[in-house]
Image (cartoon, rainbow, N blue to C red; front, side, top):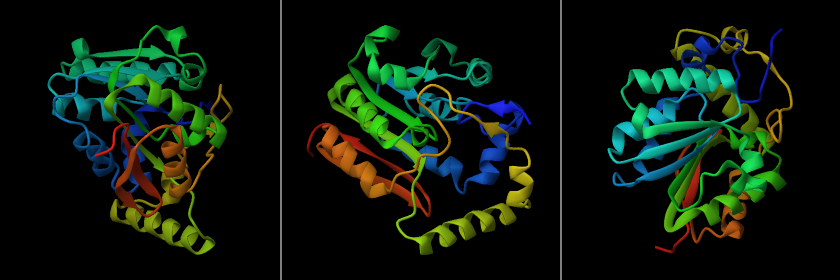
Length: 241
């Protein structure tokens, strides 16, 4: 079986956009929530772990002045995303860097992308970091966005109790059935991932733990604009509203 970077999920890149929508309930709605949490006038945006570019596309469509700088350590994902962004006509407002955002958290100057971002976003990527590294990343984000800037992340969360493990699992199974497929069929397309840089297989934390880390990292306002069973969009602003 082909070995993958954490986050690549599917052995064939072409399966990702369809497969992730079968695997995760309300995937598009989740990404849409992030875009709606960004003011339409947002200009400079940093995306951590852009994958196949789905979130980038939604942001570029909603924010006409946005310039997105996307980081991802997967060459095949970046190539796929670049083709998609170019086909949509947004290549002048999107740039990508092959890099591990864990390296950026430890040494932000190394990439030469500067600071003063209006916003930072991420989806289905940060949960591959251990909690200590998540917190370090949140700290780096807090020092890299403007005083009125924001950060939004979409990720799976650790169930708060064993009872909810089964509840969340049942919700995903029901979603797959509604897509006329089974989770077993979707997972048959999933490859085996291995540790890459600072990322490894799922290192989930509870939603409460994430919010505490964000507050400790310097976010004065933290929020959860969306949650659906074991998936959540959370983040906030540096300033207090």
